[in-house]
Image 1 (cartoon, rainbow, N blue to C red):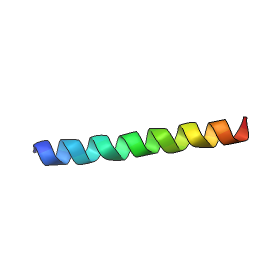
Image 2: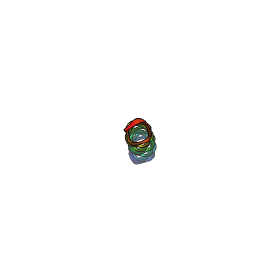
Image 3: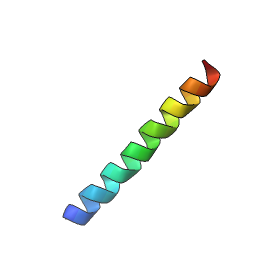
Length: 27
């Protein structure tokens, strides 16, 4: 269960980082 949570958290972190990078790129 802990491994799944950590994997999900990592995916969310990458997604947020990608969105921030995309927004920063367009602005």
